Image 1 (cartoon, rainbow, N blue to C red):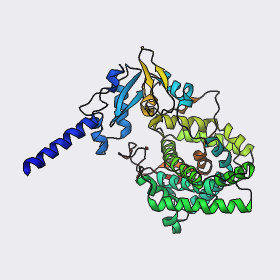
Image 2: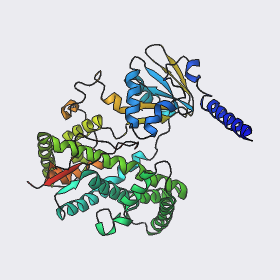
Image 3: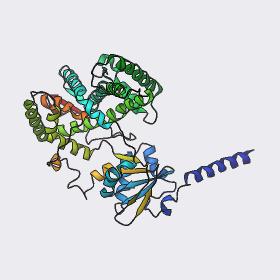
Image 4: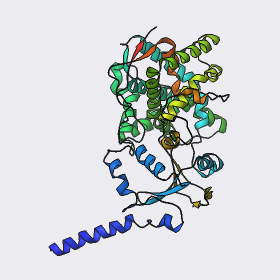
Length: 419
């Protein structure tokens, strides 16, 4: 009996090994440089799985170890994936072969409906700050803001994020539930959004009142096209607001706040620019005014260069194409293959950036003007009325929580002082 049991276990282990290694020669056969390992990528990923190494650091190491290549093949556990090293190829992936990858078709719509909704949230946050103590944990504060933006901009409802008495039923609580389990949305959260979307869409189809939220825009499109959208699709798009707009946004805002507390001269220059522009537009946040806050744009760019909102960019191919490196390596990218770009490694590569570890918004000083994204508007409220100062609770150096795919800051405390 024992012999049979041992034989079954050994047989299962051998079958499992061959399953893991079935694609192990994939990159060798195609003559593409690759990251080696006893088991495809598994042995390298052990420290990430055990939460000892941040996944961004793992990919940075691959990037640095393969700087001599244009691209390098790795294994996403058992599936081949291609990591891009050279910026020229990154540009090809994001621009030239843009149509060969899945993208979000609703991104342009989002920008059109956000501004008026966010102005309401800014007013709510301003009132919250004026009635509170002067010391805040930045990640906690900006999580409330970004979750409230999701509630207002997606559904035109109060997310109760700045109401401490209702914190257990707030949109921030829902956001936390989702990001505790990134791979699986909790059933009660899924049911909540399905019910909410169905009820709100029915209401918006009937009342026809002009609003500035995503679901109202969908109801207007239904009237124009004479056909109803599927609730499953609408729920998926609304959920993407939560996934894209909650954790990423609050983390980036926290990093901006972190650097502003450390560089008072930069903060003063930003304050002067904001006051000047706001005075020009009668203290109103306008689309035209946002385009004139160029130094804020530089600060955001430099912050996201040092601590990117997306440490690892992933693209899944939907249409076959050929990628050619300057060193003669050619890779046929097939549908289903993942393309990986280590954003953090590229952003800190001394080959492309002078003094890459130094925080210097002036490196983005140019004639280029960009729109300021939705999640940085709270700095109109904060920098205009408050001066951010270091709190003794601030953790130095800046720390990220290991094991989280998105870069999540830890212990960012600051004082909000009125001049």
